Length: 178
Image 1: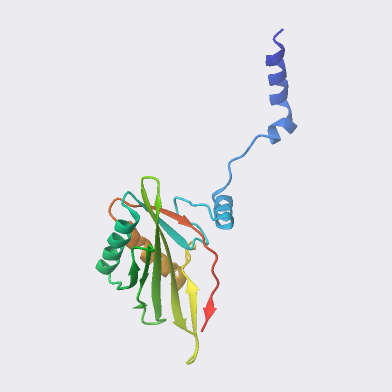
Image 2: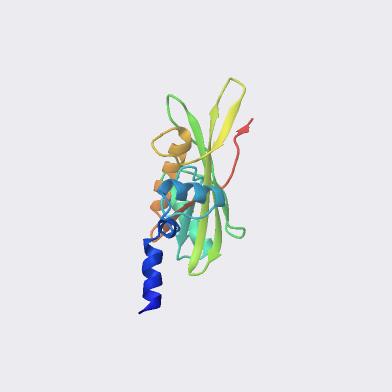
């Protein structure tokens, strides 16, 4: 009698062993895990606050090319330092009913085979005659509030970078009252 085959058959028939089989995580579990750990995902997920643009260009060339893509899409660079690898945009006024100002930052770094641009953004809205609130961009399913619109706007611009590949992650930030 073939003992290993018999053991395998008995184990597969056992309900306790069947329950020990690994299961695939759901999309919601993956999103939560990515958000909690800062892992990169290939699609936007609830709570994503960072867009990762992978390029085959060097870090300084990628930053300059991204600055041109921003200008083409109506954003004016505020600071551009290719030595440090840092770019910020001047605020762009968006919206008529609930106006806000969108601002973005990109940090470039080298990675094997090219570079990585880490893109974050925020919007600032008036909450009273004397106060405004700045909130980081964030992706969420179904809503089109300023946080998501700010995210989707820069995502469309980043996807216009020729030869780039997008990824998504989270960077914990808190709203700032001014």
